[in-house]
Amino acid sequence: MNFIEEIIEQDLANGKNESKVHTRFPPEPNGYLHIGHAKSICLNFGIAKKYNGLCNLRFDDTNPVKEDVEYVDSIKEDITWLGFQWAEEHYASDYFDQLYAWAEQLIMDGLAYVDDQSQEEISAGRGVPTKPGIESPYRNRSVEENLDLFRRMKAGEFPDGSKVLRAKIGMTSPNMHMRDPIMYRILHSHHHRTGDKWCIYPMYDYAHGQSDSIEGITHSICTLEFEIHRPLYDWFCEALKIHHPQQIEFARLNINYTVMSKRKLMQLVRDGHVMGWDDPRMPTICGLRRRGYTPASVRNFAETVGIAKRDNIIDVSLLEFCAREDLNKVATRTMAVLDPVKLVIDNFPDDKVEMLNAVNNPENPEAGTREVPFTKELWIERADFREVADKKFYRLTIGGEVRLKYGYIVRCSHVDKDADGNITAIHVTYDPETKSGMPQSNRKVKATIHWVSVAHAKKAEVRLFERLFTSPDPDDCEEGKTFIDYLNPNSLTIQDGWIEEGLTLENAEKHYQFERIGYFCIDKDSTPDKIVFNKTVSLKQ
Ligand code: ATP
Ligand code: MG
Image (cartoon, rainbow, N blue to C red; front, side, top):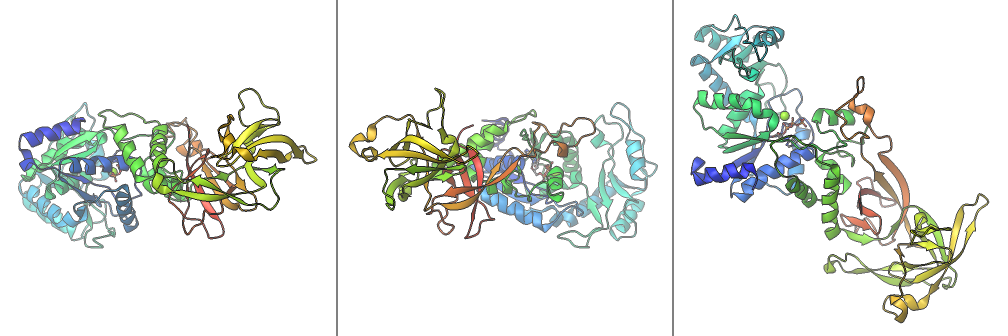
């Protein structure tokens, strides 16, 4: 049980909130979700499920300048893909009327005032944590004047930046967020939902807690950077005498070799460093999906990482481990040769095509078997052969034996080379008695290698990925550099490979294991003529 669950179980035991649990996931629709958001989604939806409660999806859309319906749609798609269903879908902008009414109430209670100072004057007046700030010269306006000015702010009488509404709390708190924080700013800007109805918009701190309150949220879970905002969250709920959810903070998820802020991810997309938000190298949920991660692997990752109270950095290899674990269970096995060299079985009849039985998934008998054509000429991986081998090389060598997967044991006699000395064909003889099920089938050889029939194999495009950044912490830059300077120039390799002929788009599975290589999935760029594969992760670390 983590510390958040401990709090919740205590609340349930004490009958707080009528012993109900209601959480929410509150993204701002200003970008695509990333693996950090997945962590928060799994936590909020997971807690609701565990305690028989509800979890809302609420778009924190209080900043019209950066938000868009494109992001709203992608966020819904990603949460659904992860396997969660929200109880209610809300938008902070739906509460603009209520928030406005509450702001008038605070003015009438003498707890809010209109300030005509500039942004700079307000910042300067706030002071520093160790010294009290200076009160605004407009702080003691009458309730009537404040109400009148606030109404005229709403009516559009004043330009952007000319006035703000501030809470009247005090200028001495060591917590700077409590020094007469801004509640409303003037922004003559079109909102993706409310259109041009508003030209004043609430600040995050004034909107978030009250939105939670309106929805009857019991536990408002957020990341650590909001810990310092909590007194203000509590202050607004108290001042307005409304339902008071409990804000609980946990450490945000950080992963090495990537960046996670939406602003930086947006920059990668905008400046063409990646193919888009769903580039398989991106830490976005849609990127992970396109890369071939399963929802279960992402959920298991979130679970394995756990909930921390202090910031830490998780090794990206843990995410890869979770992908392998699930893909091993669900991926359909197939043979593919990515760096081909020809293998000729000299004693195999020229035109013979023998169909060999191959297992689709040893972890799942229901996946059945398929037939793969075996012929005189096969493609094998260049790396599976060495003319001269040391003691540690167990695969094919001149004079040595190896088993061809699902087929026979072959012995290498010699190789053909071109004028430059490159191997053009490896010649072997096969032993017909060594097929699986035959008397000699148990003969021991040190290695089994995969292959595809030259006459049957199809060409496919294979995209191999490495980490997007060369530095474990691209946010931590040397002087004069930005995270862009740490992009890995080799993060994408595109090559052709040979795949089994039976692997067609029409009967494509979601996830494949290219035997002995790794896990792959079919990319959306595929055409009937050429399937494109993304490498999700290699078989072993
Ligand atoms: P970013 O800093 O990446 O732009 P954000 O915090 O501004 O993200 P929001 O849309 O406001 O993004 O986040 C929605 C929810 O997801 C918030 O509750 C936030 O705390 C949580 N969240 C964001 N990033 C992470 C993370 N790395 N780990 C865990 N939770 C996160
Ligand atoms: Mg945010």
